[in-house]
Image 1: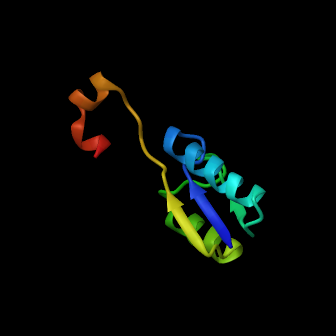
Image 2: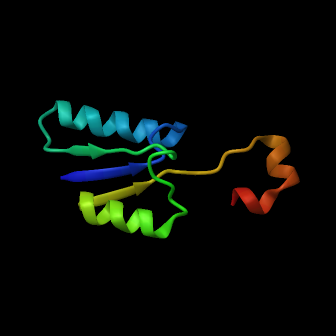
Image 3: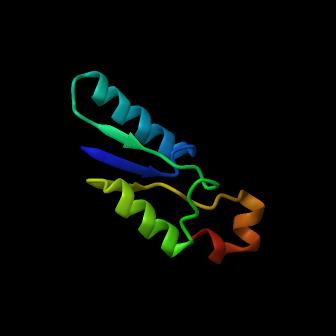
Length: 81
């Protein structure tokens, strides 16, 4: 199974990747695909379409997020929904 994990460098995404890698180590046939923001901008619809057409993952895990902090969340709450 080919799995694309968006946000693989964040807290949640990296935990998901570690879990999938552990499953792979135990014999499950898992192929992981990851891309950094500079490699694939998820806000660029055509780039995402091209990527998905090329990679054709069986599953997509979306753990990508915009992260602020307490002050940023309080100041701009709609940006961090």
